[in-house]
View 1: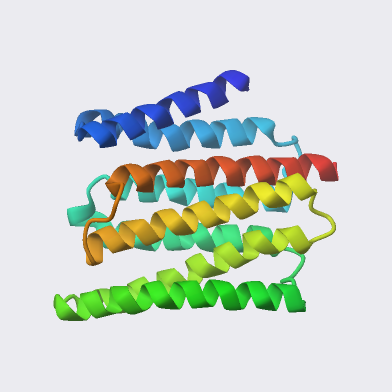
View 2 (view 1 turned 45 degrees about the vertical axis):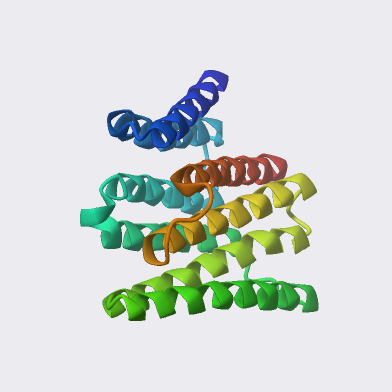
Length: 225
C-alpha cells in the first residue's frame, strides 16, 4: 500500500516535469497513471465492507480520471472533460453530504464567501467569453462553477461535522480549496489569458487536491470503524 502511494507521487512529479518541459509523450503516460494509482491505493485502504461515502468518493475519482484523459486533448475534448469533471464533483458533493447539508450560521457565512469568490471569477470569464464570441460556453462554465463551488462549500463544512475527525476535515477542506484554485486557473488560462505559473500551477494544485481529499476521506472512514 505504501508502495502504491509512493508510485502515485512519483508519477505526479513526472507529470509536473512533463508539463514544465512541454513533454507531451511523458504527460500522456504520467497524468492518467497518477489517478489510476491513487484510485488503486484508495481502494486498497478501504475496509472490505465499503462504506457509502467511499463508494461515492471513488466514483468522483473515477470520473476525474476520465476527465484527465479528455483534457490531454483540450482542443478537441475540452467540453467532454468539463462534463465528466462535473459528474465527478457531483459524486464528491454527495459523498460529503450523505447525512444532509450543514445548515448553521457558520455554514451560511462560508457559502456567502464561496459565492462571492465564484461570482467575481465568473464575471471576468463570462465577459471574456462574450467578447471572443464563445457564448456557447457560458452556460457550461456557469453550471460547472456552481457545482465546483458546492464542492468547496461541502468540503469546508466537514469542519462543522462532529462525526468528522478534525484533521480529516482540514485535509478535505484544503483539498476542496486546491481543486477550486486549479479549475479556476484552467478556466482563466483558457478563456481569459495566460496566468502566472501556467499549467504547472494547475497540475500541482489539482494533484495535491486529489491527494488531500483522498487522505481525508480515508481518515474519516477508518475513524468511524
